[in-house]
Structures are given as C-alpha cells and as structure tokens.
Length: 115
Length: 109
Image 1 (cartoon, each protein chain N blue to C red):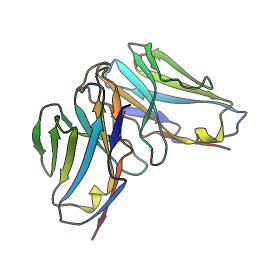
Image 2 (cartoon, one colour):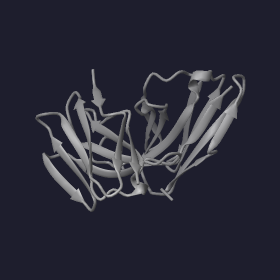
Image 3 (cartoon, chains in turn yellow, brown):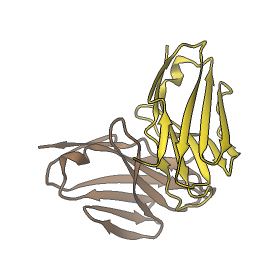
C-alpha cells in the first residue's frame, strides 16, 4: 500500500473511445502529478497540480485532459488516443510542489493499450 | 539540454555487491533521488542526496559528487528480491525532476 491508488490497473481502448484514469491519495499532500512511462524511456512528466491548480503542462497533446477536483483526487481524461500513447501512466503526490527534497509517492499505474 | 545517463541493464549474483552509476547534466541542481521499481509496481523512494558524500541506509548506500555530476547506488548482500529497475532523478533549478531511463538489475542465484 503506497498511499496513492490508481484505477483501473489495466485499460484497453480503441482510438475513438473516451475513458478516464483515476488517482486518489490519502497522504495529505498538496501536489499531484501525472507521468507517462514507456519501455526503456525516462519518466515523462505530463501535468502538475499544486493545491488543485495546474502549474505545469509539458506540451502534452490535447487528447489528454487532466482534472483535479480536490487535493486528494486527480483524473486524466482520454479521448481519440493514438497507438503510440500506449504506456504505463503513473500518478504521484508529494508534500509540496517546488521543493527539491519533496519525495514523490507513486501509485501502481494504469497500463494503457490503445488499439 | 538536460540529461541523465545510467546503464540499461546489469546482472549480479545473490549475496554480492553491485554499484549502479548515474551521471547527470542539469541546469542547476537541487538534489538527486534514487527510486526502486519492481515490475508492474509503483516506484518507491530509496534515497535523496543533496550534499557530497555517501549516505548509508541498511544494505543500500547512495553517493553524490556534485563537481563530477555523478551519483551511484550501492547494494550490498544482494537478495533475489532486489531484482528491479532502479531510477535516478536529478532536481534542476526549477525543482523539476529530470529522470533517467532506469537500470534493470537482474540477480542470479
């Protein structure tokens, strides 16, 4: 149990589908993150939220749409994805955003396959 | 540009010692993290170094040299459960994490 829970663990979707990934943390953290992890590549930061406000969007295509309704929940809405979007999507949280020593706590990820 | 280099894969024997190296080039530096990630699981925190030197935590130690842009993770008395990927990440001047691609460590009996 890492304190950060992601659902679903696995998702297969067609290119015309719309789906959402959910992340929940009960650690009392103020910052939440979405990362994309592809095989043999570095983690790619997609979005950062601090106190429910988006502070970072690293040139992510608009087919990925984040939502942070409160400091404990984070969603990633997906629509019209491409096969190259298949990857492990990791959610993480940390005490604060913008601190060098702020350890990130990760969820187990959603393994997404776009067909 | 900013970059982290670490070996793609390493193999070691149960009971032995292994050192996983990481070199970084970042704009500014605010520390370096090591995470462990078992297959299909979440990355978990191992260590954070911001000052030069060696920090020991049980069987795991992490070393940092800021002048050389270099860190290593040392694992002693290897156990089969240490088979995992080890991720190195440096914190740049904007407090962004710059990640390496990870080192897959295979432990053989």
